[in-house]
Image (cartoon, rainbow, N blue to C red; front, side, top):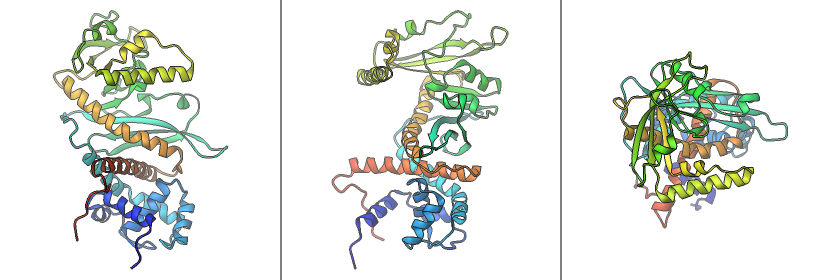
Length: 377
């Protein structure tokens, strides 16, 4: 018997990173009800990853598969396979995410609050004439279920920034976002629809008042935190963008002081960006880099400061994966046909990110052989 080629060895290594019951998942979630033109679950996964991870179009993928004698199907059939694999890909993502997040902070669920991590990105199709698209997605936490996915041409405001206004809001939803979402119009948009927010504060775009409606001196308050890990919170409100005729939104600013190493890294990044974009940093901006500052309109009785940071950290763990996703997506083939294929494409991208995270962890932790030992069949 000939030894496996390096490509086949790499593929077997990748399969070893998947959840132990990934084949059963394919059958349980209906991805392989009928295997016309495809041998098994492994072949289907290989085709999907060629399309999603490598960025080949549907037509290119089926041509490669036919030449390699992997499968003989049409591009339309592969699209249908992608649609039917949505729940399978999601289940594998959920399993890997929970595995990668082991040892992370415990999050306490609230009966009437649905936490959702929202994000977006501008994606450009390859080539000189490639279109520009705005991608917005919302994932329920901690289940990782995608409950909203939009992909539309990015023009004007769509190409310039993110906002909570890009998402539908139901009563009880709590949208978790990073600094780019920290602005009064977007936050009030959520609150006006019965939702809540948990957002990283952008000190240059989001301003607070105290409970009496006077300007709140945030910098003065955070300076009282002098030891790494020390935290505090203050009751504040955010004025409505339409003026005093509209009610201000009450909430809390929650702050924790970073370690010196983390603060130095943040300041280094700020200085690098300022140098690259040719602008002067304000002294207070560098001082704010010593802290992590979040805002939520959920009361302390419903969500403690520790729980608020735990939920935000969970969102940040997902953001680390999606930093890879955004890089992959910029080189990938964009789906533009229907919600089901778009969500499947999203889960496929997320699966690649989670596999890369697991592979990196194993290469570090399981040296010198670089993988987990496989049990004998």
